Length: 461
Image (cartoon, rainbow, N blue to C red):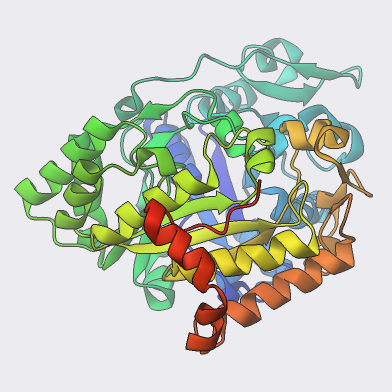
C-alpha cells in the first residue's frame, strides 16, 4: 500500500483577510500528526497569505500532485471552500476532495448532493478518520473499503449517499498529541500577528441553541494541565508572544483551569494570554489564578439584556447575573471583552438602545456586536419560528450575501434595520464621548439603583 500525498488548504476570504485575525488552522495540524505517523505525506497551503487568490492553488497542485485535497470551513467560508473544490476538479489532476469541520458536519448529505466537486465529508473529529480514509484510498477505494471509514459521508458507486457512524468522542484529548505546526508557514503568521491560538478542550458544558460549535464538539472534553503547558512552551519556542485559548470556555472545569495556571507558574512560562469564559465560570479563585498566570483579558458572551431572550436561547444566565460576573472579572484586574447579538429574538429599537445604556454602565474594555447567523445543526436554524425569526435563504452560506445583509430578521426588525443597528452600536461604542458625563448623568437613576443592588444593569423584563 503506497502512502498518499495529502494537501490541506486554508480557503481564501471573500474580503481582505487582513481585517481579521489569522491563525494556523489547528485541525490540520492535528490531522497531519496522525497522517504522518501512518506514513502519509502532508502539505498545507494558506491562500490568505498567497494574495487571497484561489488561482494560487493551481501551481501547488501541479507541483505536489496530491492524492487527496482536504478543505475545512466555517459557514462564512463555505462558498470559498466550494470554489476550491471546483478548481481542484478542473485541474489536470482532479484529485479527490474531502471536506470537514463544524459546518459541513451538519450538511454532509446536502453538500454531496448539491456539489459534485466534493467527494467525501468527514464528520466531527477527524484525526483518526482522515487516516482511515487515506488508508482506504491507498487500498484502491471502492465501497467495501470506504465503508470501513468511521464518520464519513460519501457517494456510493451507484450514486447514492452513504454515511458511516462516527467513532465515539475521544474523552482523553491528550492521546491526540500536539498539533504538528511544522506544516504551517509560521513566518507568515508571526509577521502578521504576535498572537496564536491554543486549544485545550473540545465541546462545551452549555447548550446555547444558536451555537453549532458546542454541538459539533459533542461532549465537553479537556486536555490535562501538563499537556497544555507543553504546547504553550512549544508556541513560545516558535516566537509567538501572546496566546488565545480558543476553547468555548477555558474554565468550564474550574479545578482544571486553576491547575493549568499553577502549572504555567511552576514552569515559569511568561506569555500573556486571553480566553473565552462563560459567565457562570467566573469565580474569584479562578480569576485570580488566571491573572497571576498571565491572563489579561476575558471574552464573555452577553448576547442579550432581555431575560426572555436569554431563557429562549438557553443561555443559562440572566442580565443581572451577567453583570455580577463581569464585575468579578474586572475587579480581578482582567480586561473584559463583552459580546452582544444584534437582532436577537425579541430585539427592537428600544431594547437595542437600552443595550447601549447597559454597556455605558458596564464599561467593558472591548465590545463586539454580531448579527444572528443561524447555522445548520442548531435549533435556531432548524426551528426559526420558535424564535420569531425568518431566514429568507436557508442556504445563505453558499453565497457571500451575508457580508451585505444579515441572514435573518426578527418580528420587529428587518435585515436592513439590524445592519444599521450594528453600525450604530460600533460607532457609539467607539466614540470618545460614549461615556461622557452628560450621557452618564442621563442614566443617574439607573446607576443609583445599580449601586444599591450591587448590579450594573438597566435590565429589561
